[in-house]
Length: 182
Image (tube, rainbow, N blue to C red; front, side, top):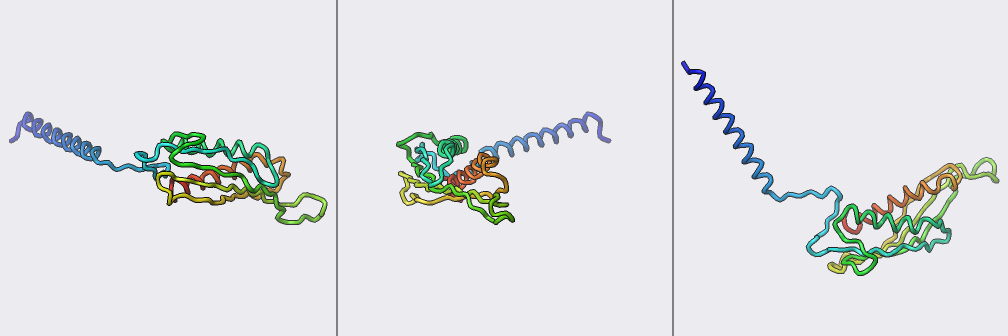
C-alpha cells in the first residue's frame, strides 16, 4: 500500500515535469523567428528606411478644393501608421508623387422630369501615381488609380463623405501596389 506521502511526492514530481516541459516549449517557440506582418507590408527595412511623398495637386477639370490636401495627408498617414518608414517630402529611398487627374460627376439615369436631378449619379476620382524605388528600380511604375461611388442625393449633401470613402480606397490600392505587393 502506498502512503499519502509517496502519492504526494509522485504527484509533485509529475507536476514539476509538466511545468518544465511547458517552459521548454515556450523557450523553443520564442526562439523561432517567425514573423507575420498584419499590415501586409513587405519591406526590407535593412535597405529601405524612408519614403518621400510629394503633395498631389489637383489637375482635374472639375476641382473639389479640399481633395488635394485631404488625399496628400491620407497617403502620408498610411505609410506613417502601417510601416516603419520615415516619411519625407523629398529624398527618400522610395518616392511617391503624382496628381489628381479626374474628378467627375456622371448622371447614371434620367429622371421623369428632365429639369430635375438625376435619380442616381456617380462620382469618380482618378489619381495618377508615379512610384520610384531607388534601391530596386525594377519596381518603379506610373499608374492611374480610380474609384467611384454611386449616390442619389445632391452632390453638395454627399460630396465630403464620398470623397473620404473614395480617397480611402485609392490610398489602400496605392499602398498595396507599392509596399504590400498584393
